[in-house]
Amino acid sequence: MPKPKVLATRPLFPAARTILDASCDVEYFPSAESASRQNLLRRLKDKEGLVCLLTDAVNEELLRNAPKLRIVSNVAVGFDNIDVAACTKRAVVATNTPGVLDETTADFAWTLMMAVARRLSEGEALARSGKWTGWDLDQLVGTDVWGKTLGIVGFGRIGRAMARRASGFQMKVIYHDAVRVAEEVEQELKAEFRDFNSLLSESDFVSVHVPLTPETRGMFSGPKFFRMKPTAILINTSRGPVVDENGLVAALEAGKIAGAGLDVYENEPFIFPGLKRANVVLAPHIASATVETRTKMACIAAENVTALFRGQWPPNMLNAEVLKDK
Ligand code: DGY
Image 1 (cartoon, rainbow, N blue to C red):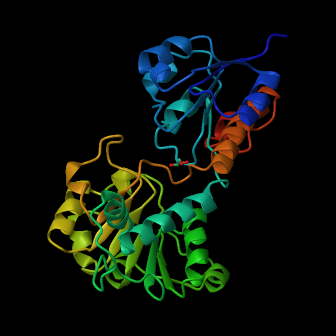
Image 2 (image 1 turned 120 degrees about the horizontal axis):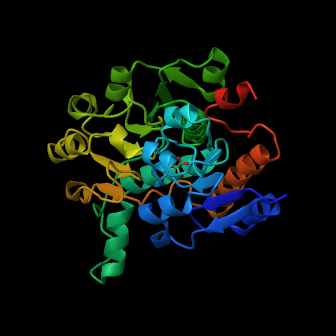
């Protein structure tokens, strides 16, 4: 029997290729350049499976061009690039890669938090510039992280991984989520629930870990920044459009907050020029970018595809209803 034809919009990692190649006939795009929209739509015509990245929009247009498609496997936990309802309408299974990137992403949110608080980018630039004249008492003084209040917005797996790290820094942890978590979880993580506005006004650091949904889009807008402490630092490793960048820049310019650490942006890869300032640390959407984690993400994406073609339910389905009656 011929193997099902699958398209992967990147070469993936060898471990993931081994999984996919064992049961599928896979075409791998060798690079980002080859994954142009036009090429993607053209090469999808005879494919039953697609392994894609969060930069690939899986929408009506793509689905129309892929009449044989049975599964879209996103190599990411966030899936705002996928129109899940449109997939469901066409009986295409959509999957993501939850669970393997939580600790790595929390590590990176922490990296940004420390970097902004301790002015690492400015310090590094000075150290490399040849202009450093030596130790000085008030040189690049930042702000302490330890002992402060960390406000976590979105208390899912990544938010909770943030909370666990905070105890080593003797921080007070408060959180906000659409749904308050069980008391045992709050106790275990020593985290107290707050409504969104109270969290903003009490926190020294606010770290964002919500998915992008109609409810969270623009959740951090102008008036919200005005509720924060003028010394507060905002960290976003979730999705760019959760934060209104115009509002953020205005708040930074007016001194309504003290700084920000950003890994994600409203219109990636464009970075709003107003964000390129000394008190903002910018990263290019790399919070999950370790060899270990990205390999695991690619393997899970591969396993989601091979499970379906073996006649099993893919482990990480976003629209299980597609297979319910099968
Ligand atoms: C995800 O998985 O959604 C991340 O943004 C990519 O690391």
